[in-house]
Amino acid sequence: MQEAGDGRRAAGAQRRRGAVLEEAILRAAAEVLRESGFAGLTMDEVARRAGTNKNAIYRRWPNRVALGAAAYRRMTEVETTVPDTGSLRGDALELLRRANSTWSSPYGEILRGLIAAAGGAPELLAELREGQDPEGGAYGAAWTTALGRAVARGEAAHGAMHPRVASAPVALLRNEYMTRGIPAVPDAVLVEIVDEVFLPLVHGRAEGGGTG
Image (cartoon, rainbow, N blue to C red):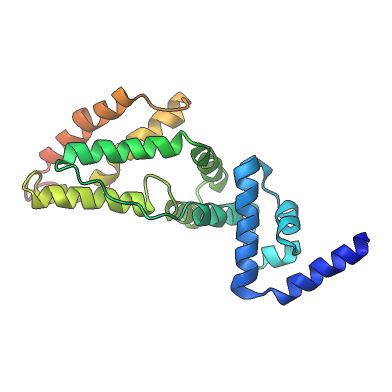
């Protein structure tokens, strides 16, 4: 019976090719990540759940970190709406609170495990940031949009439109997680990041200043 089952699974794997097989693999990998985190992600388990073999996975992803990054991006691909509270402070607080919520959730734990495993590999970090890493992808674009609206309202100078300015609040939030090892950052700290660092940084970049 076992041999017959293996044969049917192999035949099914042969029939599923291209995008269909890739989707099955990513779906299986996402299931493992949700259940066991990155530590539990193995090529053997993903192959078993996807009804394929490890060679089919390795042809698409060279290792489990690359597979995990692709699966995480797929499982967190949702439309990110940009808050529009009418003020840069309100928008910044809402965005920072969303980031804090993501990082303190099970998804955040998975993401931290993947980032640690990726080390300094830029292509894998870029893959993760295209998902819901609060410092990149849709989140990063949301911060830039919030800054652009502030400039349009006359609340900030055009010089504030700089990627490092936009990423500063979440970089500080990330530091809280990495250095303090806390499960969630208190809201008072988020307010402090916005009021004591981000807004002074934005308002300090007067028109024509700090273009580098």
